[in-house]
Length: 298
Image (cartoon, rainbow, N blue to C red):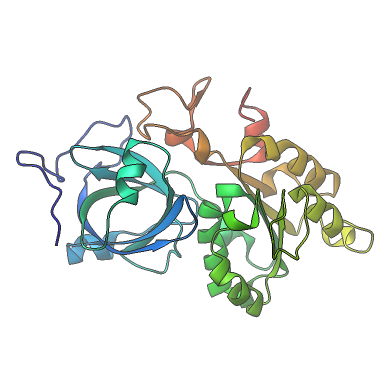
């Protein structure tokens, strides 16, 4: 087992973060690492202490802080189902110092995690109703947790549609689970911006999938009994949410994740603030009514 804890550096030290919750870092082990694409890997992580593991309860859409002592720390959305008590999955793209360091790690490495933090997708409030989930690019990472939660309780919901768009087929994430999602009566549609050899699916923007879903005969299903979850680059939020509003959804039933705006995850760097609102402290999940009242949120 590789130990990354530097002498004199404790994973259990309290650190200020501008919030009331304890920022206690739990010692955790990377139990598995799975390559997903050329730049993303899926990490399975388990908290070492049994009591802390049992007490680590999260909801879809929340995030954790991950620390590699001597390297840095950062917030990451949880990609696993909330039912996996004490075991979490993170899908991470290697783009910075910490994430590139993580991309070189193997199973058995010790790290620190704290949390969970942030607001969540209120899937419990959607029971008995239809749910449509739209993810663009890395937006499928925080989206996977609500998908898994809905899947595990499939009989409690109405129609469930997942629409997922990526730049290229080689950048699609969680492809190994797509068939399983469909087996649980989830309407999954995938689209890419640019085709590659062997790709036989549709090419275009994710809005094309939604437009087809809203075609005559389908539009009547939308309304107060339909909920929407939207994750991805902020540029996709307004066109998609405008289409949903036009179809009859209320702003309070459309939920977006602004997790891409987060940086330090502590409310200290002020890079994610929108006026007096901090994505990491007040989000990352907001209903669309709240987002429209946050100037320059999208």
